[in-house]
Image (cartoon, rainbow, N blue to C red; front, top):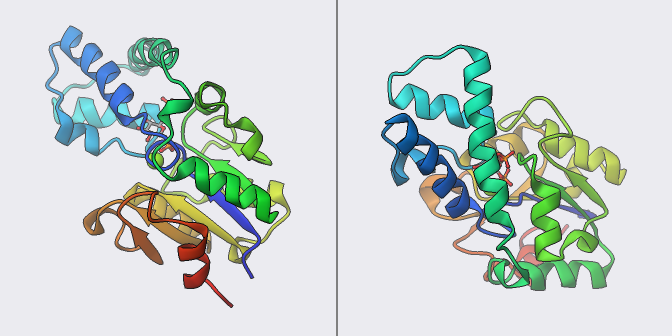
Length: 217
Ligand code: B16
Ligand code: MG
């Protein structure tokens, strides 16, 4: 029986990918590194430190750990500043409606994001009240595809993984949900999240009715 819903943030509730892209691009330009949307796509759902390593690998660059942390912090400062412009208008279509519906139906709801800035994003969206539990990049040390963030969320909700549905837009996010024994809803194209239990192109199609009819007991 489904009792809880666990949502990824970027790509499910809102689209911060574009802001992440702009911040990485600014850093890459400063460093003389190549960075484009194809490389950016590989950063979907993975942690900040994993992201900078993907960009460095792409450029055949190796640096000591302190310098890598310094550069990742620089990118984060740019990204966090850009979040100031985010408002309640920045939900992905359908996301706020689903969260509202889940609240009125009495389901338990958690966030399971890789981002260490998730609280700030939720504040900008005025979305914090939709969540009983907030799991973010500070909650666990092993990031997706490890299931840890979703296990953290379900444990805090007091629910077993088999009673929860994870919403994810990233390939590694669906891998993480499966590794933790959660039901999964993929948001995005077949080639990215086709391995989820059920997939929708966008959050607009992922209504409570559509999701519930797939996972009915
Ligand atoms: P931060 P999600 C992820 O968010 C983003 O998709 C990914 O691109 C980013 O690197 C990661 O958060 C870490 O974000 O630098 O803010 O800690 O999809 O897990 O909500
Ligand atoms: Mg995501």
